[in-house]
Length: 537
Image (cartoon, rainbow, N blue to C red; front, side):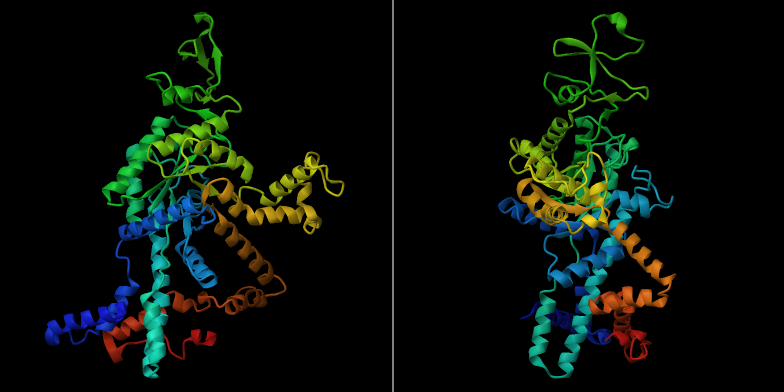
């Protein structure tokens, strides 16, 4: 028997056991409400989505073409519409996630107003957004299921047994819009206890994967800006442990930790860690410091720091602000050490923040890590901070120059930094080759550079700004109302988007049906032929 029909029968028996007192309860309606509210808590969601991610990680290990993707979302409605769109256009949400960006929380969700990505926003806004996103995703389930329930009632009214069985099968096999969230906890918002407390709230809200970076929490910077300061490994590992303890305490034993290293672009440290034995992590960290050899104690100033390194007495170079510098050119090796150390001490996935999207550069670092940990996998930021058009045109230009190809038709990027961005080059052979590289970047990087998950941190920030700009230009210009009708509503109708019926998406139909469940013929309904939603079919 169908699971839907079996559950209806079970609840019918339960109603009967209560005698006449439950005569006002329709067992099938109760079953529908249960199905529409499948997930009763954030922890249920965290466990469900953690299982999905673990399966996807295993699939990727078996076949690197099975990579996963996500888009960063700053509001529950944005995440909901993304999930609905994927399901409508692709037929499945398999291997499609949501990324929750700390940058977008700071810029768009703080009560202080727009803030830079420096962990100045309220940390509670992060679990709040996770909860909001899952509320909207669950509502997408409820709306779609409501349509199936209405179609089932219509099939029964028409005596169409074949259609009835088909719809019941669709209900039994319904794919939820609830998908994994990879959530950004920045640098942990304080010490390891603060990290643990925030991680718990994020997991309780539904996060199955938490991404944490190795910057100093109180001076954290956006990954694509200057002034980044990293912490010694023992500090970072303590926070990884804190997140793992949070997962274990809440019963999510397979929760995922994404360890991010900013060392490629970070040239500073706040702390010179104490080495307890030769070759330990502290001594390896210190080996990258910029130092000056001390030959005479009289060279030292009051309170200068010196230590023994490689048979010499050296002094780390300290800046006026008290920070210490790493040697130029050590970023690659520091990234590799960070990655190996994180995976050996509890992390599941890596995030290497880079300054450009280059498959060869990423692969070089990942392959070095994989010499030690063969199944190392990356989450990679396909960042809007990169000028993708320019960087890939520069890459093609360089490849063609090395191959001796005639480049006289193109600006030399060394002489004109933005010359390759010219619009009149868009249809050129070089631009088409660059676009081909961009199109295949994710597939290529997953096969060649160990990238399990591709995300764009800020796509919906930029997409919202672009959409509003285009609408405002026309609406407040000569097009007037046509700008909205042609540019928005007509597109929604022709793309068969659910949101064109905005009343339904906001819950009107569900609410009407609930009123009918609760009050029967006495229900005061908002729908019907007088509702303007009927204009959209």
